[in-house]
Amino acid sequence: MDPAFGLGYLAHNAKEEIYMSAHGTPVPMTSRKSGPLSGEANVPGDKSISHRSLILGAMAVGNTKIHGLLEGRDVMDTAKAMRAFGATVTDHGDAHWTVQGVGVGGFCEPEDVIDCGNSGTGVRLIIGAMATHAITATFTGDASLNGRPMARVTDPIALFGATAHGRTGGRLPMTIIGAKDPVPVQYRVPMPSAQVKSAVLLAGLNAPGETVVIEKEATRDHTERMLKGFGADIKVEDTDEGRVITLKGYPELAPQTIVVPRDPSSAAFPVCAALICAGSDVLVPNIGLNPTRAGLFATLRDMGADLTYENERIEGGEPVADLRARFSPDMKGIKVPSERAASMIDEYPVLSVVASFAQGQTVMRGVKELRVKESDRIDAMATGLRANGMSVEDGEDWWIVDGRGISDVPGGGHCETHLDHRIAMSFMILGMGSNEPVRIDDGGPIVTSFPIFEDLMAQLGASITRDDR
Image 1: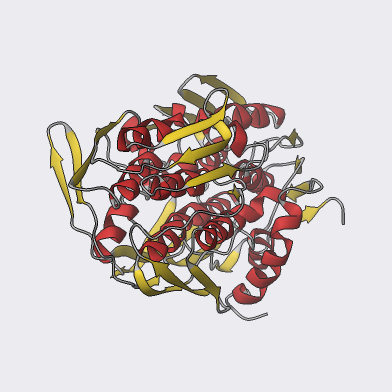
Image 2 (image 1 turned 45 degrees about the horizontal axis):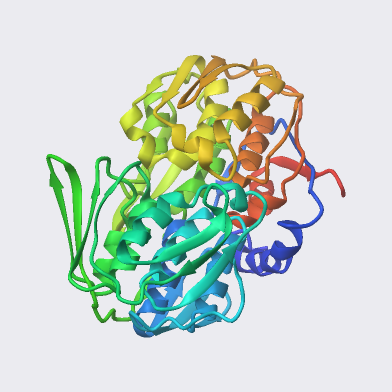
């Protein structure tokens, strides 16, 4: 296997397993204490940018080329959805894809139900994109996605004139009837959510006049950056009332060539593993460091982690660098600034693992969004950490981990992942540094975002096994 961990080969084989493992028989896994981790960790492409590349490529006129697309199940479901709405989406191998778009307003009505699997990002963005087309579409997902709230998206698309009919509590399966005569909208996002903001902006593409989104706290801005790259007339201003984003409707989006940076949320796992495994030195090349996504790395540095950025640069409008992580035995617990939550919301589970190996308390507040992710991530992590000998306090929008230091985390517990890929991977990282192995009930969902996780971590020197092998 080549120095890049055979990424293309592994991704190809992962695609063959994606639909079998994510909905099929559980895959119990065990992680054991690891020696030094070393080498390059070529993590997959950024999931947020991959979703948006496919959707905006489908709404452009012409052929969009995407290099480095994440080929996890979530993104593959978005690719299938774009085909269902009329775009031609082609896999050329080695994470190179093309999208022949149908233009703004060109979506056709799908012939079948759109299954978005486990992807909250995918379903919410797609609902936004189709909501201002005079078509009807029905959406569903796996057990986890079908339990997640959709009102946060269906409320604003109703302002455009779309209607939604779903299960009690605004849950999937759900049928969306797009607006026949959409109107422009001014919408103040009630919670920090890049998904909601992006859904409104995508809906605004096929509405007349100007659609305005106001967010009190800045969230990941990949949609704004990419809309500008595709040729949309979009303006972003920081004002006293928050960040104001103004989009003019009915643009003709031009096809793009997109190089997807590697996903900082996926990079979090080999990075955090290197910090807690003695003697480790891991380089993660080409990581996206968009300031709305890099909160974890700032937090780890505040804790005393040995993290350095090398070869910092701009690629495709996004800041990128090579990130080096080394064993950090003297990390301290901190109070994570609550205003940082939006820039690292998906990374709190693995941060709580690192906090276990730090000295003193790590306090995480302002994170109630974690209660409505693929699982209730606060409860899942608190319960699993306690099962592994840790002291954890938690409330509605906060939790506190009492760190035991680098060599005193007991481990030995069995953890439920609740069909959540980030919970599964976080507990696998815990087992690499704890004194006893850590087991999870199901690692199958990992393929939704990081299909080469097991192979990549093994190449670095980690010991993760499937208990059914």
